[in-house]
Structure formats: C-alpha cells, structure tokens
Image 1: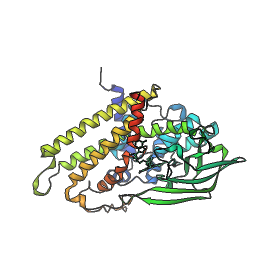
Image 2: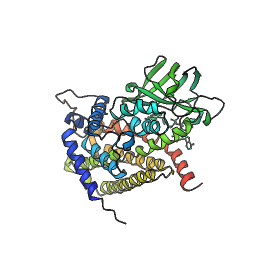
Image 3: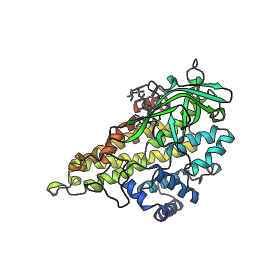
Image 4: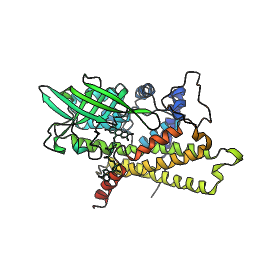
Length: 398
Ligand SMILES: Cc1cc2nc3c(=O)[nH]c(=O)nc-3n(C[C@H](O)[C@H](O)[C@H](O)COP(=O)(O)OP(=O)(O)OC[C@H]3O[C@@H](n4cnc5c(N)ncnc54)[C@H](O)[C@@H]3O)c2cc1C
C-alpha cells in the first residue's frame, strides 16, 4: 500500500497556506490561537471571505455550490485553517442541517437556505435534546400541530448551543404523539418568532453557549417542514452521524497536542522542563500515536462515506476523538503548572483593539476553561456509552 500523498494534494496544501497568509485577518487569527471562543462576527466575516474565493462549504459538492473537493482536500483544508487560527465556519449549517436540507428538503428550501449558508448569512441552533430526552431522543414530547399552512409548536428544548446568536432553529417535534419514532418530524423555526423564550445556562468554565428554549404557541410555516412529516427520525439519524464525525475534532486535537508539546518544552520553576521527564514524555508519545490513528481513521471515514458505506463511522470517530481531546486537555493543565491556578474566566472576552491580554504566558488563557468545557465532549453529540452500543451492534453484529 502506498501512503504517499499525491503531489497535486501537496501543491493544494501550499495553495491553502498562501491563501491563509493573504486573506485570514490577523486579529481574528490571534484571538483564536489564544484560546478565546470564536465570535459570530469573525465566523461571518471569514465565511464571506471563503465564499468570495469559492471555498465556502469545503464538504459541499459542486452541485450544492461548494468546491467539490476530494476527502483528502477537505481534510487538508480544515487542518491548515485550524492551525492558522481561522475560525470555524458554522458547523451546524455546513455539516449538519445544510446537507440534510440539500438531500431531503424541497427545492424552495434549498434555494432559500443553500446560498445563505454558503455566504455566512444564516446561523443555526440545534433543537433536539429535551430535559427528559437526550440519549433516548425518541421520547421527546415537544408537540407541533398543523393549523392550515402553519405548525403550532409547544414544548421545551435544552442544551441548545449558540442559539442566542442563531437565526433559525432546526428542531425535532412530535407531529403524532401516539407513534414513537414515526411520529417525529423536523421543522425549521425562526429564532425570533413570537413565543420563543431563551434561558441561558452558564457552563463549568464560566462560558455561555448553552441554553434552554421554551416554545409557547410558536408558529412556523408548513414550507419549513424538512422532507416529509413523520420522517424526521431518519433525517435526524443522518444528521447525527454527520455531527459525530466532526466531533472527532481532528484539527483541534492536532493543535492542542502541538500546544501541549510547546508548553512542556518551556522551563518551569527550578529550570526543569516537563518534556525531559521520562514519564511525561512517554505519555506525550502515546498521544502522538493516538492522534496519528485518529488522522487515518478520519480519512478512512471520509472515503467510506463517499463510497456510500452506511456503517456508523461517525460513532467510531466520536469516541476516539472526544477521549483524545480530554486526555490532551488533562496534560495541558498539568503542563501549565502554577498558571493553571489563574482562572481566565471569560473565554468570550474580546480584548480591545490594543490587544490588552491577561497576565501569564501567551498560551495560558483559555486552557483551563476549555479543559472544563471539554468534560462534555464525551456527552454531546450522543454519549460515548451509547456510541459504543451502536458500534457493537453494527460492526460486531451484536
Ligand atoms: C456542551 C453540550 C452541548 C450540547 N449541545 C446540544 C445542542 O446544540 N442541541 C441539542 O439538541 N443537544 C445538545 N446537547 C445535548 C446532548 O446531545 C445530550 O446531553 C446527550 O445526548 C445526552 O443526553 P442527556 O444529557 O439527556 O443524558 P442522558 O440521556 O440522561 O444520559 C446520561 C448518561 O447515562 C448514560 N446512558 C444513557 N443512556 C444509555 C444507554 N442507552 N446505554 C448506556 N449508557 C447510557 C450515559 O453515560 C450518559 O452519559 C449538548 C450537550 C452538552 C453537554
């Protein structure tokens, strides 16, 4: 087997690097490299820059208006963007609801949302989980009743990430309360529609991206039903497998590991370097091996999906990637030493134009807050215990 990368793909990597040097705004890159949360304005600006180049939607085929890249090129592009400090493009739009709309939505829906997603003009919230329906999503109770050419929605969603700054919520509702999964439909709802109340939830790292959302007689037009009534469960399964695949977070794992190596290479009190400790170095080497395995697994998954394989590779990637992210985070906090005790409590802070950064080494901000937030990676996108059952059922036919 030949593991060499095609020279054309090597040239593509250089092209991406040159583009990033030229087009990625320095202040945006600086903020992201310092560990602060992505700002919506940064994401919007960056998506528009990409769209002008025809590179928005790296995972979108050309018939949807994307660049139509091979899996290897998508992988290279995301790797380079993340390492350069580019913000995410909206994953909920590009990697979750976008592909579902383009695959199952009406022509009108595709025309309305496809170009807006590509240009960063619409942001999304994912309204799936409810207080009593997370792993067991089939027991959701939020109800939608059809009245003429509208649905009227009543119920409550929780953990709805970034909905506070979203424009549209894609949500699962019960259109037939008697049927379990076959009674579920997927609807798009204007986040600012009358009857929606958003209650913030502050996370353990003092960050704000989570919400509880209440729906009281909220109306959405029937044209915002995705696909067919009662088929929401199968669209959701498709969407969740896409979500889990990117939960592997290969680029974030790579960047965090590089950051960890740099931190461990700095002298600490007493002049010692953590990287010279045989115990620490051996653990670091193991993380390197795990990262390489994740890289190959991610590439394999991209090709399997392209080849139409329906095995739940997203579940495999999710388990591996989320656990690696947590292990790297634990060692980062260890490597921070005393600076781990200073809590950089607001990962949303936007330093002023003069870049007034907090005290400590430049790699310290955000590390502890991110470590705390990432306790949730083995839960969001579907708990890892549940993913292991899916893997066992599909791959091992248990
Ligand atoms: C940071 C964060 C962001 C999120 N963002 C969103 C979002 O934007 N939109 C959205 O809709 N949801 C979101 N979620 C919700 C997430 O999808 C759910 O938390 C997840 O599916 C687990 O559901 P639950 O919290 O109800 O836990 P439960 O279903 O109550 O599970 C709790 C634990 O019980 C165990 N467990 C449960 N069922 C099984 C089983 N069948 N087999 C073995 N073990 C089991 C697992 O250990 C699991 O972790 C987010 C969650 C977090 C933490």
